[in-house]
Structures are given as structure tokens and as C-alpha cells.
Length: 415
Image 1 (tube, rainbow, N blue to C red):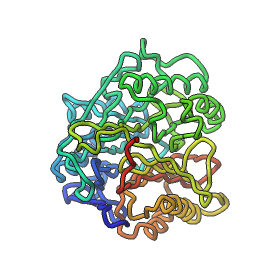
Image 2: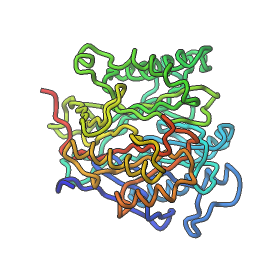
Image 3: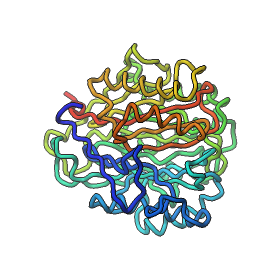
Image 4: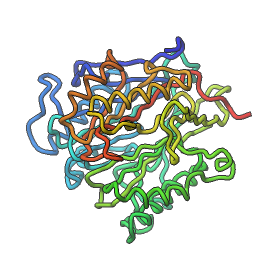
């Protein structure tokens, strides 16, 4: 790890502790929290009760972590909520409202095939880090900017876009008509187009071009639909003449889900650059920054995404699966993490710079075998982490992994 790159990993006894991950990992102006299960911190066991009790424990664990680092729940920029049954979201909403009475973060909600410990719900949070980590030149505490537009669907439980420092976090966009708030009538191609139109409407409302997107997550109920999704996706990326000239594509992960709100077939979330940053910024930071996209021939390439896209003080790495899909889950995990290592080293960083890892397993019974390999790459269990069971993965893979890494030098300002 480069000397100026201070990744600050922290744990509190007030929330469940794991040897495989840190509860929160801060770099620059963000804290990345590990996904929180409904576990009692004192016993490490699943709390008694149904979805409401489990959701409350998840949010209590998030709050304990956030409080332990001298922040509060209003510093949360994005929530990601994973449930086993999409019909449980109403109960989760009631619990969330109690923890966020006046402000709603950007939000993603999905039903997945399995959650660790047999949980019914899991909650993850991205939190601002106003003072920043001290090895990077910092301004004072920054302001969070929230935005909603009538040109995109409105959701009482989330804000369409929440910007902090040099990133905008866009809530998961479903294929909803902005006027009626209802799912559009159409096939998966038409639904994909509506999702991306909604993302574009949000960005237009805050004067941010579509080509400032650095990471896209495509959530799809049926992987057989991905050919149709991709045909539409290619009509949106690249967006501008400049982007087409260099074939700029955001980093991307395709996540199979069991269900989505309103039983939609596809949904899309995005992380977007915010070149001018939220105020106050140091004078040298008050410039539009350059998105740095990088591919290396030493790792598998994808025609629809870039291996890693850096903006400001973060590198966003696309979802990786094994090249040899005949290998067992240990072998596939080794290949995924080796590929991520190759990608991050190709931009002069290392695995020690990684702050967050997202692990998707086709079968959660493979967790122990995956963890054994995982600890060889992250022996201290430093990065924050998410593990979900998806039931199926692209190309029949057994494991898929993406990651976020610190980018200590940052990306340069526009000339």
C-alpha cells in the first residue's frame, strides 16, 4: 500500500464483529460499512422474531457502528436493503422510517435467494466522512446535497440523488413511469430503457452528464434476459461524442435477484462523479475532475464495461467471475480475487487499498470454502464486506466478486 493511502478500518463491541471483515472502512470522504445482519452483538445469534424485529436489529447495528465513529444516521448517503421476500419490504419501511424521521438516503432494495445465517433481511450503509482521512488533502466538513425531480419516479422512502464530496449516489431506478409511479407495460428491453431514462432524468436535473457515471449495477430477475438488457444498454453507453471517441464505459456488475419491488424484471443503480464536489472544497478541489478508466490485458475484458473506473479518491472495480468455470468454488474464488488483484495493481495500487468487497455466491453453502480462500487475500479481514446468495450467476459461475478501492492520489482536475 502506498504510504499516503491510509485506509481506516474500525470495529465496535456494540455491533457484531467478524474476523472476515471490518464493520466500517473509511477512506477520504466516505465510510463503507459491512452489510449488517440481524444479529445480537452480545450473543452473535439471530434475534428472535419476524421481519420487523430482524429489520430493527439490522438498523440498530448500523446505528451502533455509525455512532461509534462520531457520526449519526443523517450522515448515511445510501442504504442497500436485502430481503428474502419482497413482500416484507413494507415492514422494513416502517422500521426504516423510525430511524430516518426527516431525511431519507438514496436506497436500493432487492430480494435475494439466500442471506447468511438464514436471515430474512440484511442492511448495508454508505456513510459520509466529513473530515476525511487525514493523509489526503482535505477541506472542512462537507455538505450533503439531496435532490428529487418530478421527471423521475418519486419514492417516499428514498431520495433520488444524494451527493457528498465528489460522488452522487443514485437510488435504484425501477422501470416506472414518472407521472403515474407505476411500472410501464412492456418487455424487459422496454423496462431497461425506462430504468436508464429515469437515471438520465435525475442526472439532467442536477446538471450532470450521463457520461459522468462511474459504476452501474444491473439487477435482473432472469439472467436469460441479459441479451435484451445489453442491447438497450449499448444504446445509452457511451452517451456523448467525446465518450464514444474513447469508448468510455462505466464499471459494471450484473446481479441476479429473486425479485424486485413491484415485481419488475430489471432495475438499475448508479454511482456518478460530482466533479465540483459539495462545499466547502479546498481551492485546488474546485475543478471538474477527470474520470480515469482503465483496462489491462492481464485480466479478462468485457465489451460492456471497464475493469476499473477511478474518480477522485476511489477506484470502482467491475464484477469478476472465473475464467475457468469448471473449477470448484475455492478455485473460482481464487481466480476472481487474483483478477481483482491484477486489475488494482495495473493502476499502481494494491489489495491493501481495497475498502469494500461484494461477494455473490450461487449457493451460500459454499461460504466456508470461499472464506478460506478469501482470508489468503485479506488475512486481516480489513475490507468491509457483503455476502449474498443469488441462486444463479452469469455464465453458471459459482462466485462473483466486485470491489471498491481507495485512490490515494485522486484524479486530476480538468485542464
